[in-house]
Image 1 (tube, rainbow, N blue to C red):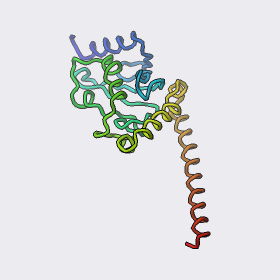
Image 2 (cartoon, rainbow, N blue to C red):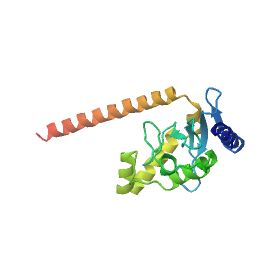
Image 3 (cartoon, rainbow, N blue to C red):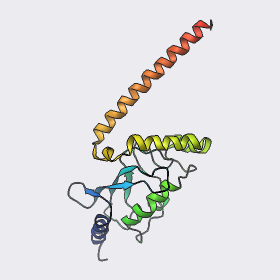
Length: 190
């Protein structure tokens, strides 16, 4: 390769020509979104995520920045930002890797083999280690709620308004729970 920009162009074109739906941002090859399906045999199977990719000027010598746009419950993915904790991308990246490696090997491996001992989402890691059944159930709930094809076509604003509705519902139910507890304690003379 004569330059990083030629390599970037080639890698993005290879990704676009594969089975992945790639949506460029600002008509450039430095920033784009990729439609990613949960790997077969994983808890995430059937889920569809929009993955935001930013390529630094020094790509492929410097790793791409990868993040989930729609929510996912996983010990190694920050629930709020969607950023990914994956050594091969964050620390041991090599110019031998390309974007197809990210989507065909690294992300599927991340979802198939979560590492709760190096978490970005402490709640997911803790639940996975303490109660695997509840963890599995929560992963599936997130897939059902946030990882449908329609979720990746909705804007981030619409997804955030859904989250606000959930937060309001949750706070209402917790207020009711507190009121019920107070009433219960009052009846017991506490």
